[in-house]
Length: 232
Ligand code: C5P
Image (tube, rainbow, N blue to C red; front, side, top):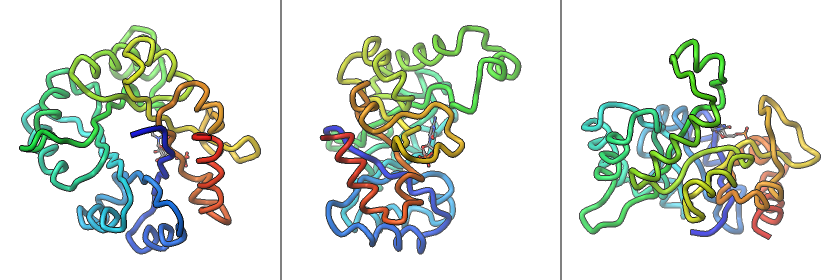
């Protein structure tokens, strides 16, 4: 899979999601389905969006004991999604178990990527709540390296970290990057934002874009603009 734009379908229900997706009459966008939509609608929405011809990043961020994650990933692999994810904080053993579970009898499997430290965690809360005293940038890179050693395909990170992740984990280790805004757009609650073009030049493999597309007057045009700027 080459560089691509993934639309974060952060909608509350299936009806709103299908109405949104029906506005794309050209290329079927790659979409991200998160916890809100999945817990509201269940696996049926994944099957329906697949049936409509979209690729899917199922963003459920698993984190549990290795045995439970292995079995849960086996269930997700049967949904035929393209990318799944988990928390690297669940340990290398959990990530290895996840890969085992995700691998189908024929050897194929969705891509598996790791969340390192959530961007809602900062140095202070990491030290205070988690008793992790290393600098947060080091923690992020250490988690990325653990993910690579476990055999995962990449991480979710900021485009601003994509270069460093590639340096440490290799050029083919995927960086899937949210925090994207058009140069002339609203930043909303995202603090460190990057344009699609800058994300491309910093080495992002996939950009995850929500509101700049979902809240646009013409989502299909905003998507096309994103693809033009990012993929070129
Ligand atoms: O609307 P917006 O473009 O900010 O959406 C970005 C998407 O990426 C959301 O689904 C958000 O939860 C997700 N995300 C993020 N920052 C992270 C990890 C995930 O914005 N560090």
